[in-house]
Length: 95
Length: 492
View 1: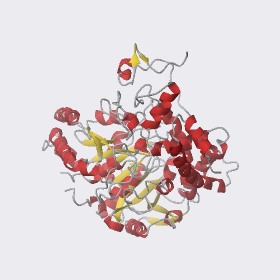
View 2: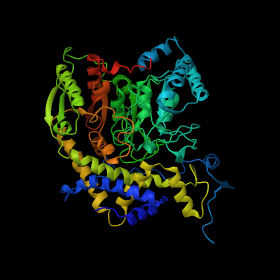
View 3: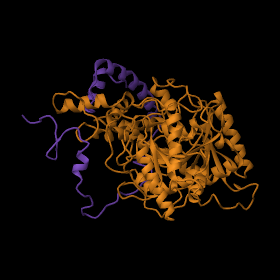
View 4: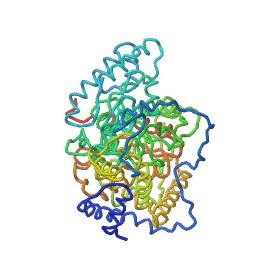
């Protein structure tokens, strides 16, 4: 099922990636080539097969509920694009 | 010295015939001389490396040396190293100086190894040619008009050109094994969960696995000994007793002429079909004959779902990538667009400008296959096929101990040859992705030369936790052959 140009733009919007009309058109061609490859999956019957999430079917570990991290916000915020008073700055969200 | 094994370098350091500072400086000089033409390293910091080398010299002088103490190792630029820029080959992280160490980096640092520099890679490890990097493509040391393979192409080229005795790589769909094959070196992807993913920038979390790249099976074993181990900070790290991956290498064989007697090698018919180049097939056949000479028995097997591994992989890996890469939003670290309107616009512009074309393509695929109404048809279907692929291996390992075949369908292709055709690039992963989907260990070693005098890789795969067995077989092959000792011309 080929992706339409509006679908490509919608997916880019969902992924929060700005896309120009020319980029969307180029992406559409590549994505449809890739989905033709992916469609080969439909040739096999997977009725009753349990999905496999990763290579080792292990159970997620739990840890004790105690503090294990020290406060390093000054170190971590030193590489942030914009910080003030220990807070990350972004454009105003609420008017 | 640049052709010495890790063990030989370790002995030179222990006997004080050379200091780590001198050794590191020699490698730094070599990198300075050879790297401009190859572009294997993206960051070199002599002061930092030499400081580590001097610390290693103190460790050695104090009699506290471990096998890798004082040895310079190249790090794929996907491993966070404190104080080092860690770019992951992307403009998005081109200004990111890591505030912490990856588990593997912590372990190597504790072992006294020296960070020689950070190697080039496909952006966020998404590629099979090391052409999608923000810092320009890496050239294959055997032929500078060819790609070195990818995504760990910088590490592969660095080891092949003897700019580093060993390197770190990561493998999500073949990113250690395929560049090892294209560059004429050895590389091993361990069983999923053996090497911690903490601090290894995530591409597809259920497939990503770090591993060593070096010139021999013996060197890989020493590197893996230093890299492997449980880490509570990686939720899928496996709690297992410490393992010496080199333990089988020293053992003397009962039958000296046939040291691999009793070993059953499965050869999947699906790996020798239409897509395989004749030159690669011939070199791999010769290698299999050599293994038979060493006493191994060849068994014809079938992995019937091989053809579905690339389609399933290109659903699962992009799906996980689209989720993992959502963290790059220009807020806490990394690239932020210089101009934007509201918050949504800041995200969209930062991501549009910070990511390259291949990364965006994969985020779009992943976002689409996870979006409402498509999840069952794509992601769930791919996960079911993943189970079928894993079951193929379970059945095969009832008949054989190891599986061997080509690592890649061809030798290294020309720079630019597949860059504009993603599907052709993806199909190059046909023999490597299944091990990642199943979580199995697999490695590549040089086994001859093909078209253009370029190296051919033999893939040796094993059942879960069969690394030591794989390394043993590879080591026996390397004692009987010298393909792994060949080095490219023009990098003397």
